[in-house]
Image (tube, rainbow, N blue to C red; front, side):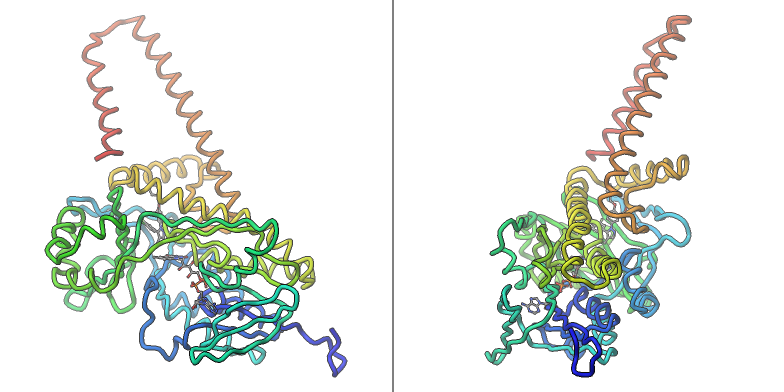
Length: 470
Ligand SMILES: Cc1cc2nc3c(=O)[nH]c(=O)nc-3n(C[C@H](O)[C@H](O)[C@H](O)COP(=O)(O)OP(=O)(O)OC[C@H]3O[C@@H](n4cnc5c(N)ncnc54)[C@H](O)[C@@H]3O)c2cc1C
Ligand SMILES: Cc1cnn(-c2ccc(OCc3ccccc3)c(C(=O)O)c2)c1-c1ccc(Cl)c(F)c1
């Protein structure tokens, strides 16, 4: 498009949503020289006291860091994050078992959500071609004209157009409403029966109540709890539990009774009074999984982040996947020289399989952890992962490692994981068959007192199965 000065005027991009992905996207587009306007329904969080209702901290890993690196703010965020080099698995008896995530450089970072969002907004504002509009809630937009209508808290309305609308307005996206009116648009959402509640573990004598450089996990099948460290030496504990279990606990004493039964080691760390107070501070929050496709309409609009794929938080990848959306879109912009009529369809073609894969994986993890995973089974699985990886480092790569510490495309990581499982099961089958045949040969040649053998084998089998159910 020729501007009055004869130079090609850059296109205008409207980013709907100034959350984590919208703010980062503003940096990506501004860096390309687009005129960027961000429209955010909330007030400027940099001026607000507290931001209620969202998880307080998050796990940032490789995919997210690579996107932040592309716009030059990785170090700014990492310097304010706390490295977690291993999981710390808490058993019912209070025993703590660390299992490293991998080699020295392989760690995930606990970062403060509000600070991350503020840094991203401020970074976007450093570009002269970026404008942030707060208290602007998208009400609707027109596919034909690209005209967007925003409503303000005083009831006034504002209308504007853009060459490209980027919907980053979260799981309950208003931008996505127009998509639902398009033919051949696929959409599904699932609320899981679990809710989550955040509790704060304060410092004890000015120090972290637990070892800080770990992702603390209390796997209790139906109930799970995790704790991520904060710079102020607190931990944010997130309790995951079915809503009907939350609803059974209505008094402070019942809170303590519940924690005494499932998380006894945390009571002296969180404190009885803090537990009783924090448990009733906010109701448990719902978790929804949203999948849709395609992510674009023509050359006019594209969805990214939770607006495109809200995932349950059981893999710690929602934000990382959203940040990677920005990076992938930018890579495709390079491939197609910013020709939006080619970029948008290619983005859907490339990204939908990957975001669906991580959505499915997070849901699989939720089902797997809820059904089978107590502390002993968690430890067994992770030790087995690490052992197989040690024995066959190029063939067996733990799924969590591929997802968290590489940019292997999510759907390729899952495919490799399925292949690995087949190899392992075949290997186990072959070695078991070989052992049985070899054993049988020896038994026939020199038959020992069989009764002495059967009991230990049964004992081993029962011990293994006990890992899954106790
Ligand atoms: C309990 C929990 C724990 C999590 N832990 C992790 C983790 O450890 N690691 C990880 O990677 N991810 C994690 N996530 C996921 C992560 O929080 C989300 O994936 C991420 O916040 C998505 O960012 P987003 O910008 O796409 O959406 P959001 O963060 O929801 O931001 C959307 C923005 O759009 C604004 N908005 C909404 N509607 C409109 C409108 N109509 N007009 C204008 N603006 C609008 C909202 O105010 C908001 O600012 C977790 C999620 C939960 C619930
Ligand atoms: C916030 C965040 C960042 N990463 N993870 C995470 C997720 C899954 C994991 O293993 C899957 C598995 C373990 C054991 C058996 C099967 C699967 C591991 C791991 O391997 O340490 C780490 C989480 C997280 C989020 C919610 C819950 Cl409830 C939780 F426990 C952890």
